[in-house]
View 1 (cartoon, rainbow, N blue to C red):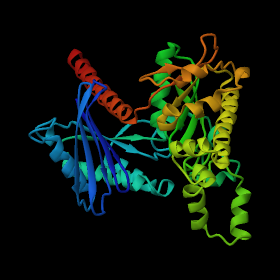
View 2: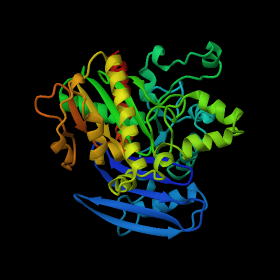
View 3: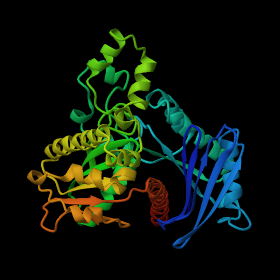
Length: 414
C-alpha cells in the first residue's frame, strides 16, 4: 500500500512516501519558502543504505504549486519512484489539533473537514495550514483516501483530573478550555517502541520529547495519563523560544504595569523567551558552544532547562505510582548528551542509575544509557512521526478491509 505522508506548515510541506507494511520510506523531502521568492525543494530518494538528493530552487506561489512539483519528482523518468499519482492509495495528514472530537486516526470526509475548521481558534498557527494540505492533496491525489492523524489524539486518554483547569465549569463545557497536549504522534511512537523493547506491555514510562518545542508525557501501559503541554503548546518545559510554565501574574504585570498589549505578550512568551530569551540562541548547539566559551547565561540556561525536566519526572513518577523507563527523543533528546546528563544525574532515589560513559556514545536505533543494575531504564529512542502516521493509516485501512471481509463472509454464511 503506497501511503504518502504530508505535514503541511504555513510556508512549508514535509513529506515521505512509504510502501507499507515496510517502515522504511521510499523517498522524502521538504518544500520551503512557499509564497516567497526562491522557494526550495529538497527531495531524497532512499536506495537501501544510500540516498540520492535533488534540490530545486523556483518560485512557488502556493501549496498546490509546491505539491505539483513534488508529484513531478515522484514520477520523474530518472529518480521517480512511481509512474502515476494514481498509484498513491492513501495520503496521511498531520493535523495538530483534534480537540475532543478526534481521539483516533480518521478518514477525511466533508464532516471531518468542517470539524477541523471549527478547531482553527484552538490552533490558529497550525490547523489552517494542515487543512490547506488536505484540500490540496484532494485535488492532486484524486483516487487516494485522505486520512487525518491528530497530534492531540494520543492524549485523549487523560483522566478529567489531569486535563481540567480550576476555572468556572462553563469555560470547559461551553468553550472547550482544557489541557489537550501536543506531540502526541511522537509520544505514541516512542512509548510503543519502549514497550516492545522492554517486553512489558504494562510498563510505566515517561517520554521526553525535546526539540525546538518540548513536552513530556506520563504513559501507563501505552496510554497517556498526563502531559506537560496544555490548552496550547506554550506550557510545561523550557523550549527553544517558548517560556514554558510561567506565573500568570507576570502577564498581568506586563499588561497593567508595563503597558504591554496581548500581541506583545504573545510574541514575548512564544518567540522571545525560552533558551532564546536566556541566551540569545534557540539552537542548543549554539548554546553549548557559548557555554564552552565561558558564557554564564548559557551555563545557567542548561541548568534551568534540565531542572524543569527533573521536576516533571518527579511529578509523573508520582502520577504513575512507579516507573520502568524514561525515554529521550527528538532532535535535542536524541543528540544532546549534556542535556541527558544534567537531567539524569542525582536521580538515584527514583531508581535511575545513569551511565555517563554510555551516554556519550552515539548510535542508531534504541539504546540504553543506564547502568546494568539500574531498576529504571534510561532509553534514547529516535522518533519518527511520519512513519507513525503511515503506520496508523495502514492499520486503519487494514482494519476496515478486514471488517468488510468479515461482514461479507457472515452474509454468505447466512
